[in-house]
Length: 422
Ligand code: S3P
Image 1 (cartoon, rainbow, N blue to C red):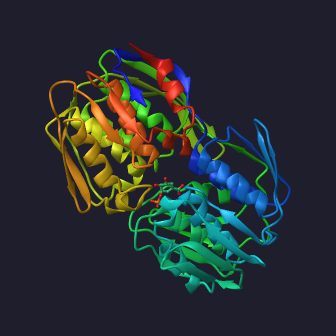
Image 2 (cartoon, protein in one colour; image 1 turned 45 degrees about the horizontal axis):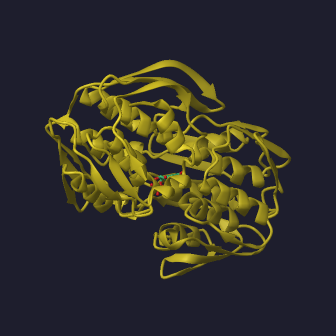
Image 3 (spheres, protein in one colour; image 1 turned 60 degrees about the vertical axis):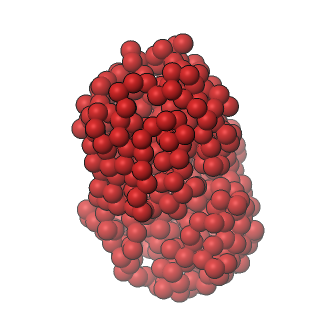
């Protein structure tokens, strides 16, 4: 795929529903009593994997514009093999739910997912009494349902997926489970569990769950995915004369760290209106092009923009000075080693970037970068980074493996073309 330079980005538009929330709505809908209607479901290869999984586990899904799930009850999932595809969120979260079901389940995934760490969920779940086998800490993973007991668990890494796996297992465990976080991560699971009637006690750095007898979700209103809005926010910031408005975007503060970072860098981003999507905050975001200055991101802030750090690298390449990210070792365990992938991509475009074990640094260049060719390494976030670099370049960017965008945002290229003036 080749992305040509843009004169500006313009227009009003929306992005597809939040991927994290869509996964959770399907999974919690499947173990609820009765029907869950999911409005604004975010369609992507990853959420299709979850849709296939909940069907295989015995929940009936009516796949229309509003997706309807007929829940089988908290302990009603039936034995099945599950193909997680590329979806880490599915693999980690569903294992928590399966740990207390009456059955045996084997999870597989594609090459990328099969190289990502699973011991991080297997270990706390085992200490709750779960029977889990992995292949040297990786997929394929087999979980055999058993009686679980509550734990107090301190997360060794800041990960919403690990936190969620434990919280979901806690639904079927005896006693009150508490998870302590080293630093706050996205709280979509907690918010949706509360919506489903579960007693959740959330404190700034820990969360406790009391096991319910049943869940009832009824309706989930999914806001636009902030992580799918982010490439447009960044493109409109760095392509001169741009002005865009993105409607109905999820604005959960545990997801919008990029907005705080942009603010420090001197960007012109405004929230026009705010509204709620169930328990989740959202609103309209307006972005105009701006001159940027460098900034630093530390471990405390990293989880609030974990999926936007590749895009941050591109912002940094357009900012005056040297920007640095620390405490982001987790980036090495995503769909690719994102530290190496983003540094290589920036360098391939003639930009100044350097990898560190736990982050990276980027020094801005005063002119538009020339462009060139990058390798997405099968990683949707790196492919989108390449596309944004393309519209902001002088000669365009060619992206190898661009089709990986379908993992989170199949309509990304069409929307980018629609809002680009050349
Ligand atoms: C996600 C959590 C994050 C994020 C991923 C989605 C979630 O992963 O990178 O894209 O939906 O809980 P980690 O929890 O592994 O950091």
